[in-house]
Image (cartoon, rainbow, N blue to C red; front, side):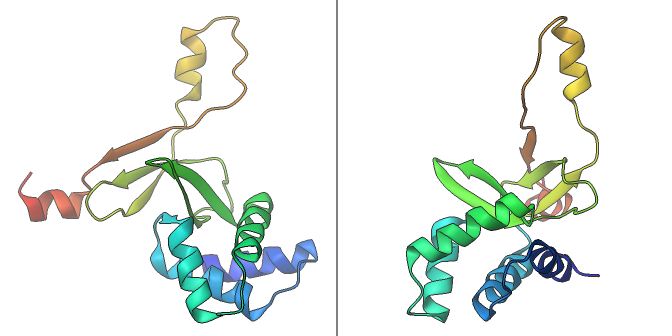
Length: 143
């Protein structure tokens, strides 16, 4: 089952109406396969559905994030989102190519490593991402 199909099923299971606009939003993010600035998503959706308001798009982004359909982050002080890449393991980390922006899932969580260095500390949350050139870009750029 595709990630987009799983996202639509999660919407249905939560009782959320599955509208053509919501399907289009999921399809756009699924097709992208990488983090997209929310402003870019907003422009795309308003181009497809001219009557759609900014508020509606941002509310849907928030609702999708709460359902676990979207992953969000901040890059250069700008909100970015992508379709959840692993519905079976929502807690995961990423390697993000700084050239093509491809996102690859990192299976291991380093939290235990840091907990061992902070005896007695109660870590409330964490965010771990790796940035660099993916294998394809490193090969193309000769690095």
